[in-house]
Length: 409
Ligand SMILES: *[C@@H]1O[C@H](CO)[C@@H](O)[C@H](O)[C@H]1NC(C)=O
Ligand SMILES: *[C@@H]1O[C@H](CO)[C@@H](O)[C@H](O)[C@H]1NC(C)=O
Ligand SMILES: *[C@@H]1O[C@H](CO)[C@@H](O)[C@H](O)[C@H]1NC(C)=O
Image (cartoon, rainbow, N blue to C red):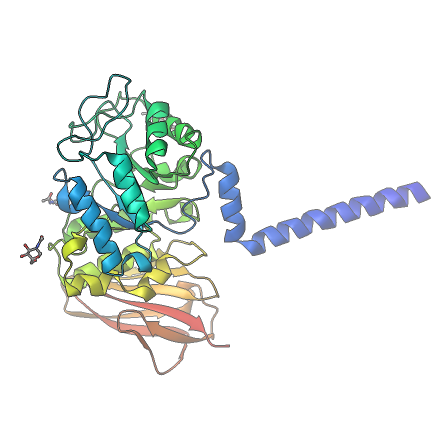
């Protein structure tokens, strides 16, 4: 082998070593790298949604009966209750905020009778409280209520209008469209928002029709995986199930969305609402309150202000939990957290008064024989004994237990 060949060989080896190092580094950086990858692949690349969005939306409690006073008072209440400090910062207006007719330049206008000060003034008010304003439109000719126009064919103009008002979040619905594919209609708004001159969180609401988990990450920051939730156990638990199927596709910058919270609206028991909040948190779902936060009960506050459960949702690793074990009505949902910790929900979905549920380390991704400390997130207690190989819990009907498991060094 000549000197020149040796030299080339060295170059090749160094190059191979470099490639190997890049691969190893990339895989060990895990989700930090995923986030950068996400930004590269996302047409919006708005840098938003590094953790699931938190805030409030008007629909579940008020449907179309909204006005600027309710939105302002809700912003006030998010601050005065301390909820905004816990991360609930988006104040999102849903359907029915605009006049049915655009102005003579084709712009959307706030409904004069209910939003007389205009949306820009509302955004200024909400921003002055340290919060963000979200708005709603539709990838069709009219929104679902048919009380206001949709943005189909007006995407660039409407995105510009939203940006000029200071809007921070857009929920984009799917009613009354032209029958074309959502995979075609939604990216038009993505491009429009990218050009609008303001980072706007883009929430795709096409109800999971065209499996947006498979393409949503390139188009928006979250995507609905289901039809609308309602304030019942059956609806809530079935949204969670449908959403779980797509767990692999959630990542920082792009989240599966099983729809907004019903906690505090009165249709479920306290334990059922605890299940609702726990499953949304561990599924890295958007935590968008859907109750009247101007008038929340102590019980509702206790649920939605659970810092430890919120911390699971907002963990920077950003990996959605999966069902790892199902036996009749007993289920275990688990997912990894930063710092080699694991979040677990033990769920009794059935009528049986008590079920004993055991999570084996095998099921939940902890190496065998690892000694683990268990923190009960609803009792706010660290269990006295460390655990090896498994953890058992007794769970009441339509209730759950939620833990963070941390290896003991
Ligand atoms: C919608 O688009 C997707 C992806 O391009 C395609 O797989 C699907 O068949 C389309 N569906 C309809 C109803 O056109
Ligand atoms: C709520 O949803 C459930 C399950 O999806 C359905 O059976 C029920 O009829 C709905 N209730 C209302 C009031 O729409
Ligand atoms: C607040 O809630 C109470 C009880 O749930 C109800 O009686 C009252 O009308 C509510 N107030 C407002 C302003 O909604």
